[in-house]
Amino acid sequence: MTDYNEAFKDIPGTVVFDATQSRLGFHLNQFCMSLMKAANRAEFKADEAAYLKKFPMSEGQRQAVLARDYNRMLALGGNIYFLAKIGATDGHSFQLLASKMSSVSEEAYRAMMIAGGRSVEGNRSKSEGK
Amino acid sequence: MARIIAGVATSHVPAIGVALDQGRTQEPYWQPLFAGYEFSKRWIAEQKPDVVILVYNDHASAFSLELIPTFAIGCAESFAPADEGWGPRQVPVVEGHPELAWHIAQSTILDEFDMTIVNRMDVDHGLTVPLSLMFGQPDRWPCKIIPLAVNVVQYPPPTGNRCWNLGRAIRKAVESFDPDLKVMIWGTGGMSHQLQGPRAGLINREFDTAFLDGLTRDPLALTRIPHVDYVREAGSEGIELVMWLIMRGALAADAKEIYRFYHVPASNTAVGHIILENP
Image (cartoon, rainbow over all chains, first blue to last red; front, side):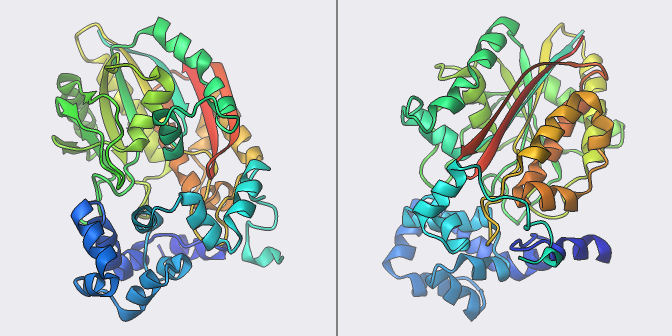
């Protein structure tokens, strides 16, 4: 089992949502699920910090949400399908989220996708070196 | 006697549903994608399946982290389109086939697959986008649909081999169902894509092409691909391809490829689509 989980850690720029991440991020992801209701989205937007206090999340998770630091949220147990609900609440396209996570402008990200996407070459293994 | 006449695989990108629903299918960005499904729409109009078993994954819509079934079969009379945060898609309600769904549940459970039986479930873009791609925009879906939701969000998802064997058990179940029904099985999701982290936007045409080839040339080889290879080669969300193996496992060994389409990109994703007919 250890080998199964460890094998993914060699893949660069990727967080696999395993048991460890799921336990770490349970309340962060529960907060995200709450944004499926319009009333909750309105309450969150009115006072984000106060709304986040309603969930027993870590302070680091709350700060990552407030900063819309998606890579940090992923590291702290957020799952992308749940985190996408924050993006939807902000009215942001998924491509904008993807561009933020890969540290380029939305235009540059979109152009990369139209040109065939991010190549797997050099992106398979941390040991490949860049 | 019911029989499986064909299998269909297709990606289920949410942005495709948005483009369709907003009437943007003729925009230069989207036109090539929708053109790739014109053959399929004509083909399925001729085939007229009575029931589609639709293998897909829920994206934190019906299932949160509170409950994570590995294989969940929808046995209800109907399934409403889910509100994924911007209101439900304005598509017809999905009508189930409870009699066949329960029969499959019983048959597969007795075959030692521990299925979760679902009597109430909203269905998200994972299920409704493939319906739109194959049937267009009718007032009512032209057949009954049995949703089969697979967990590919929380690790570990089921192995490719387990998915393949579930497909075989589904075939056995369908073929032991008395009414004379034409049944299709669809596998959805994929192909290569990664939606998260610094590696977001990963596409691997070579892997995708080999996977499409493998569906007829050597499907058993595909069942041996470990999870880590999907993630490494096809991106973190490329793991959805294990669902295609349920579809393939339910078909005959000599199922024939009659159509294939591949297009990059739809938003963040490589779109793959294949039709396989049983002899």
